[in-house]
Image 1 (cartoon, rainbow, N blue to C red):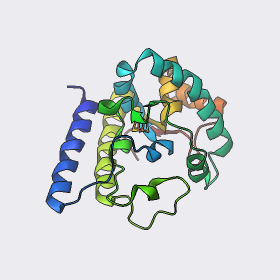
Image 2: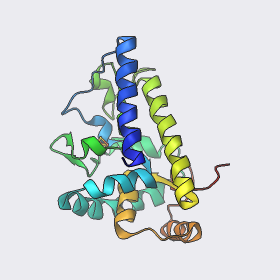
Image 3: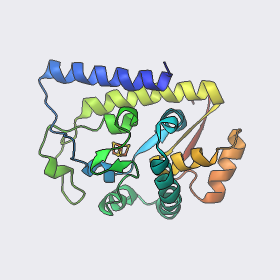
Length: 207
Ligand code: SF4
């Protein structure tokens, strides 16, 4: 099995076990998609695992939305309020289809780890969610899997690329260059490298 898919499945199993042991029942439901307006990041390895599962329509939407997101990132990557501004714009993830995730079995770890047992009304972009609205342990579990994938990506490529979902999938569809210097050069030329919310290219072994 692809190592990324193994991490996706292992996280699902771990989350189910944790939630049942704690008696926590998430209020997340199909058709509830406010979190899909948010800024989602993923690593190159996750993007590459998702790519073969995309339909032509999804690829077309990524080719349309990816450059727009990269332009937004260029303008806002150093703004501390960028994620909240982005969220309030309610730009749906280009993989959202009729209120459902169009890649549900292959969605990134970041999407899997964002859960609430609270009132879904507090997930809306305009809402002031109370502290602890989003469950912290599931998010930490997802984050540990992300770190494991960064490690695997570093071993495979010698460096790790992390960035916004639609922008990164668009770049992968177009073809990322091979070396770290070339990838950094491309992202730098696009104005989306580094900063608080821009793409991160991290050397491997990880510092
Ligand atoms: S990949 Fe799926 S779950 Fe994640 S933001 Fe996009 S539509 Fe939502």
